[in-house]
Image (cartoon, rainbow, N blue to C red; front, side):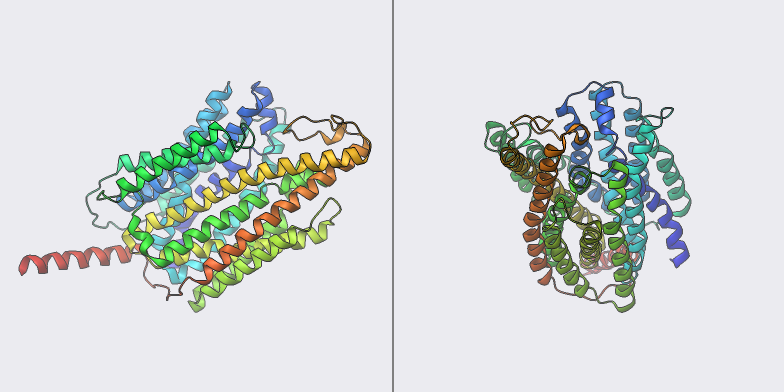
Amino acid sequence: MTNRQILQAMSGLMAGMFVAILAGTVVANALPTIIADLEASQSSYTWVVTAELLAMTATVPLWGKLSDLFDKKLLLQLSLGMFVVGSLLAGFSHDVELLILSRVVQGIGAGGLTALAQVVMAAIIPPRRLGKYAGVFGAVFAIGTVAGPLVGGVLVDTSWLGWRWCFFIGVPFALLAIALLQRTLRLPAVARREAKIDFLGAFLIVAGVCALLIWVTLAGNEFDWASWQTAALTGAGVLLLVAAVFVEARTAEPVIPLGIFRNRTVTLTTVASLLVGVAMFGGTVFLSQYFQVSLGKSPTVAGLMSLPMILGLLVSSTVAGQVISRTGVWKRYLVAGAVIMTVGLGLLSTIDADTSFTLLSAYMAVLGIGVGMLMQNLVLAAQNDVPASELGAATSVLSFFRSMGGTIGTSVLGAILANRVASEMTKGLDAAGIPAGGDGGGENRVPDMSTLPEPVRQVVEHAYGVATADLFLIATPCALLALLTVVFIKEKPLKTTSGMERLAEEAATATETDKTVVGS
């Protein structure tokens, strides 16, 4: 494909990815209003947030496997269609139960978009040329991440629109993506092996992962880490995943081919993706809360304050991708990205309520530069080193573990944040001679800063500043482990043929081998 044909084909992919990112970010500032309007509880708030993430994470491997067996274009359009259905259900919800169900449907569709967009890119673009297109997706990621909370806040504050449009707004983009894919994405027909879906393995994987993700999401909030609920969920999750491994090892078409983990590159990039998910998403997801509570910024300003990190990610992924495509050398950028990400997290571990925005911006930019050089190129390294018939499985495994790492990191660090905030506030209030309960909030609840008297406000700002810095300090060793993992990845020359071309070559080779065997 020419560069023009590739960019045309990517237009639908970019619209689809924008939809997936927007779905996760546009409701960030709207959820308090949504929950209040539906008269739901705090636990419902948690489930509205986590339902989509759980569904997306759990179904990514299944989407990846399906892409190895069926038409990738049709699967992309199907995932977008599911997203449209979920968005409409969410927008018309009149009770929180239907809203949570709709978020699950949205999550399944978003899981398909997350896995399939990268699979299709690898199918139509040779690894040697893939790097320079990563910046385009970086731009989409940056726009969706920054614009989502801002758009959500505007929609909620606009009386004639309201929170329901936070869900409706993604529908036209999804329909546009379906139309663009139909018109621009041309994948050549390739002879495929007989499709056999391992439904039992898929069920066991999804059930086991959901059990563990529900545990790490709710532990420390809904129940104690050391409790019977923890024992039940972790026990069930481990047993289900052990059963999944047993089934996957014996089926002809496993959802996650265990054989791909014999590939050193796939194994190491998978471990690194998990650690990046824990460090990156677990650390940065609480920055918006730090901006609003500790620094006293509005939701809109808090959204804009993350721009340095997003711009750092965008610039580094674009520049590194261009250089990799031109030179064919990629490992040094993985190592450099891991080093810079570790440094960025270490710098952010020094922040407090008095840190200037200039210094904070520099720290966030360093983190963004490191993540931009590392995250996308881990996928490139894995895709370059697997057979074309396993591109979908390998890509989805990396996306799955990165997403699972983010979920685990967010949940565990969130519990640590809550405990540290409570400890710091108790200590600060005692030192100021303010009686307990004068903080304006309750257990596991963020205080309304506008209602607090000045002495209490200073205590709360200090507590959230110290606690947020601790999260980055805890995330730093995870980034360091990711660096050690990346160092052991062996650099191999980037292939100059696309996934579809390699798949056709593999099919032709298999046919010739069969003829030779029959002839002999």
